[in-house]
Image (cartoon, rainbow over all chains, first blue to last red):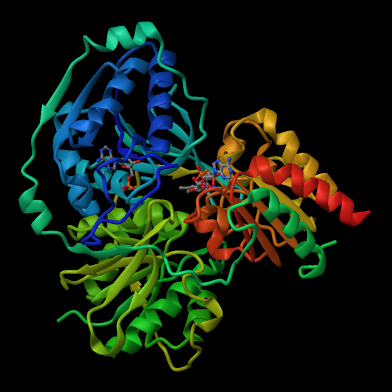
Length: 258
Length: 326
Ligand SMILES: Cc1cc2nc3c(=O)[nH]c(=O)nc-3n(C[C@H](O)[C@H](O)[C@H](O)COP(=O)(O)OP(=O)(O)OC[C@H]3O[C@@H](n4cnc5c(N)ncnc54)[C@H](O)[C@@H]3O)c2cc1C
Ligand SMILES: Nc1ncnc2c1ncn2[C@@H]1O[C@H](COP(=O)(O)O)[C@@H](O)[C@H]1O
């Protein structure tokens, strides 16, 4: 089975975000990056499927500037076989359709049996790329997948629905699945894996992005910190311990919870 | 010329998903600003569903009908909605940002060569000015204003809670129509939806909940939060990553894929406040947030906030509560 995993590099969760002067995006200069959370689980699932079903190939595909190589190399060290890097500096500004279109062009020729993506990116948060990609590639899809059974001719996948409900789907191959976080425990890269990764292929493709960016149906005009809607009483003024003592008092006298 | 606002009303097992009415309120606001009619679309033959939507201020209710729509599948819904959108030719298609909509609507939009403006929290379209959709990015930390090139149809989805369902205007006199559609091959077969074995812990009855997030860092630190919960006579709960890691069982998870609670007191320790967590606890009477990041979205809904390290707060708060309780 040939599996393609889409992995996006995003700003570190704990990074302090600053908005740029033009208010069009965040300051990227001193930002640290990591792999998008659900994409890490997508990779893990693809490696497990390969191990369980006797081989095949896991191909990682990531789109972005040269820095995304660190996500690719990490995936190769964990066990992916090779990678496709769709190179572009401004890919974060692509509309969800344009981003999916570029990715579709990059992986179409691979004729994969299975394509896994994360269910949502932690920066743009479109929650769309996988589904649009499936449509563009002409394959069926399932979203928010938390279990994959690939033993049979067809796939059987468990989807998460709202408020603690679940549902199994049987779905034809080739297919695209968007993977939910937490589906399994993610493995670490071993030293051996890191050494082996050095010899693995990373193919670069350079799409013409300008035309796509210009034809975007949706465009961000500005970004800003959300307006606070609730009057929060901040306690302690930077001194957490003093804040805690004050809080106990307030919980008793104002909120009357004890 | 494209005209009108189409609202997709989602239902399951003969009842509307309540966020459908929130999306309806959004569609009505847009319709009023642009002076355009709102048309509701229901993918069902169930007359009671169409009747219910017809009780709202909409110009038309269209029941889109095919035997292949009895059960939700992304293939079936996309085919059906594509035909409805092409036939009705609206300027905007508004939907609730539910799991079901996330599952098929990007595919629908792709049939029109575009994506969704997804998970919006606000809409501004005063006095015929340009329509601006605002959505949250970076897990709720930043807002982005989005405009379109004006080409119809524009697909937008609204986050749960962005509008109030009870503010959807009532009305009468909506025209009811049915629209039979041809649905093509369905490439996925759903089995019946189910819930996992009965949950052991029912947090919906808890008076006090102390919830931990990734800020707790390690499993070994949970005891400190547990001690606070005990001092307050409350229960321990968590954000999703804590349950994903197996540090607490899934029945302690709060949020869109866990439990929805509204205790007298909810203390969020090291939780950033992603929307999927907020929907599960934002109706709590008193909300306390402790987070070292002053911009964490959880502070948006907190009555009391401490900007600082939970490991300094937990022991002091536990001791002070014990003291005050005597
Ligand atoms: C379809 C879907 C369904 C989901 N369902 C759920 C759900 O049901 N429930 C849920 O919770 N999530 C759910 N999520 C995940 C959600 O989007 C967030 O990823 C998750 O809630 C984040 O958890 P967190 O706040 O604990 O972690 P993070 O977002 O990583 O936040 C950790 C916070 O701790 C703070 N912190 C770190 N160290 C300290 C310290 N020492 N002292 C003080 N503060 C500290 C940081 O500043 C940060 O704000 C879902 C996501 C999707 C896409
Ligand atoms: N630039 C990218 N490179 C690789 N994968 C991506 C990229 N953008 C989005 N994806 C994939 O699409 C998923 C959903 O992203 P989004 O639609 O932005 O929420 C992510 O979890 C990734 O798996």
